[in-house]
Length: 365
Ligand SMILES: *Cc1c(COP(=O)(O)O)cnc(C)c1O
Image (tube, rainbow, N blue to C red; front, side, top):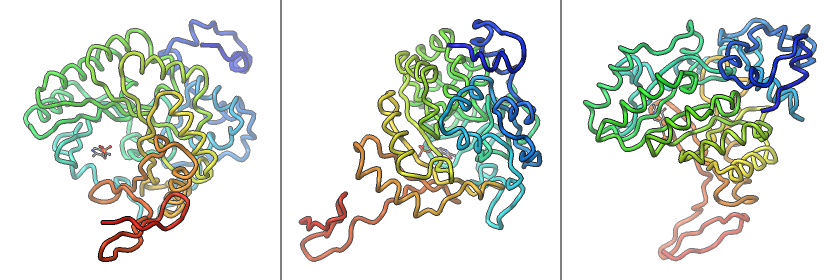
């Protein structure tokens, strides 16, 4: 992957390509001082807000360089730069809006639906999103889940036979090194009743160097591995991130996307259509478009639910059906897939349906 020469001249010393492509160097060298980051971006730091809701500020050199080269840098910046509006708490917002802590039979497990669990293996991320749904964890001192808690999680999964899917999440699971990751995946795979392993990650977009041969060899050993990418904007799919995604697909992973609908970032038809179609061209199936959760300090990112419904309707009109994700509102008690109402009326022998073009058609019962 090409070294960013602007990045080198910013720091005044030339790193070589091997260093730039070392994922551990990328993590060690993350921008963690907002002033440095904004200066590199060429953004006037006077306007920057330093007070935030305590989600850490960290951006990999790779993602910083991607944003800088984006034609929509100001949009992507909103998602990583702390903002004083994060301190505004709406009355209905909560630190744990999905009541995950109440559904946590042991520290690393969230068990809300009968057949599947979240396995939270770290609170670290390579780059932090300001609207993080799990900010109650990412705000804490960085930790990787301890071996004994991981073991307790594995034990819980093996003792509960109704669990057929484990979603490895965090933080970002690909933050962990390969030894730990392989221990987790192989331990889950040894449980007979677990059919599916899903990994939720943003790493291929913010740290594509992480998708190296050693990781791919591990992922290849335990099929099927479903990987759900957190992608929010078409500009995140550039040569290097697309190559990392391609390596995952070629290693047998099945890729899908989850996107958070974010005001001023991707809440318009052109951006979403471009994103969904670009995902498909990269062998990623658009899976979910999430209404921004009622997490504390994210109200400036939240759209009206009707905006989301209209946008998904627009996608259905203008794109392949493959490009249309489910629009999901996660509320107390679980996810709700919302659809605009297309079943307009019921008569004795037929339904009146509204089709993609808005026309009404009579469909016999
Ligand atoms: C979102 C979520 C899942 C996965 O839901 P899907 O509809 O299968 O994508 C599982 N457990 C918890 C607690 C979740 O929040």
